[in-house]
Length: 229
Image (cartoon, rainbow, N blue to C red; front, side, top):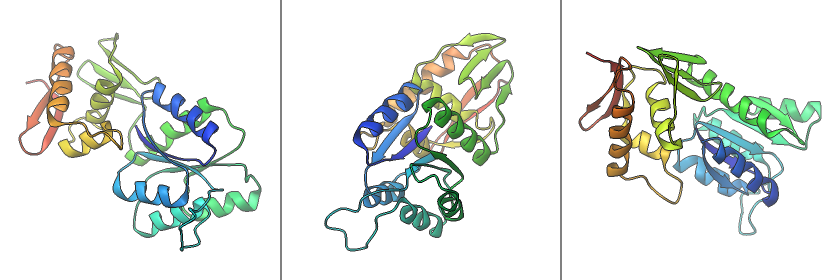
């Protein structure tokens, strides 16, 4: 998953980033409302982790100082990215305000990182309309366990190859745009080139041989995971 983490506490932000990246996610981070709004506008995300109590930059003239501002602006422009609010503001009226502003879920601090990741996965599954278990031929993806298998045998994949195949399985038979796939695998400061993406696809083709599934290249468009033959 590609996640936008919006948190102004540097220590907590670093801990969360390490945990999310180790789980195989790609994370971009912001520590202010303006930073969050900028990243949210220029990059597509699978989910957003949003703190409510955020500072505005010293040069800001908009008066922005709450994560709800960035959330309301995103919803106003039609952005439906799943949002999980993380905040010390845990009173009932504040939870209601966050949900009414367009948040999809809410966790009060302190929280368990494993629960944060589980809730993120659930939000993304719901948004994509995908099942926990997805099968094509003998290739199976268990989203909850974040694991692929072929005919019951685990298929071990490096993080980026896992994300490529996961995207192609969401769901199988869906054409995945090359630029969209590259963006999801890139960090905000480092873009993934076409050659690197082609290398991932080439390695994956070899690893799923005999599974009953194959990856077809649609020139100028992207990739398609479909039944072999």
